[in-house]
Amino acid sequence: MRTSLTVPEEMLAEFDRTWQAEGLDSRSRALREAIQEYVESHHSLEQARGTIAATVVFDYVHDEVIDDLHEIQHEYQSVIDTTSHVHHGDWCLEAVFCHGDAAEIRTLVYRLKDFDAVGRVSVTLLRSEDY
Image 1 (cartoon, rainbow, N blue to C red):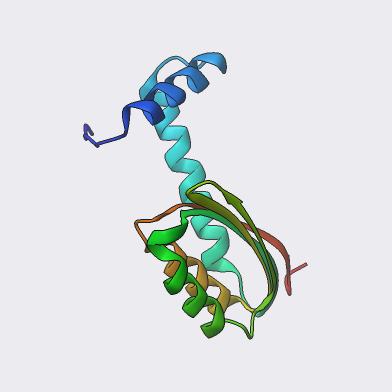
Image 2 (spheres, rainbow, N blue to C red):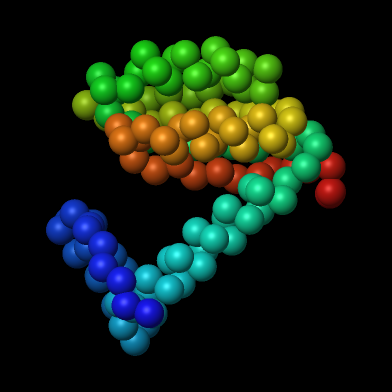
């Protein structure tokens, strides 16, 4: 199936350099692999049950979203153990260390992903009741 998407030029150039450095055959192949990784990451978060420990790392444009992020972090304080925050000019990097109900942490992650001013949200499941 053919599809089209809009990607910032700098991001596409970096993507092309990356897949070429890895020796992949084409941009299409690299996109299929990236999509597969995204789907696998989503499934692992969706399948988590019970009490889990996780880190949620994300970057964002400070002035555009900081008030909303503070509100969300207060909403989810029952599963947020601590945060680490670093300023880099106009944007920030934040790590949120979570422990609690998988469904609540999953909802927190999806809320963070819903902001245009949040660049990327990366989740690492560290421990669950299944281990």
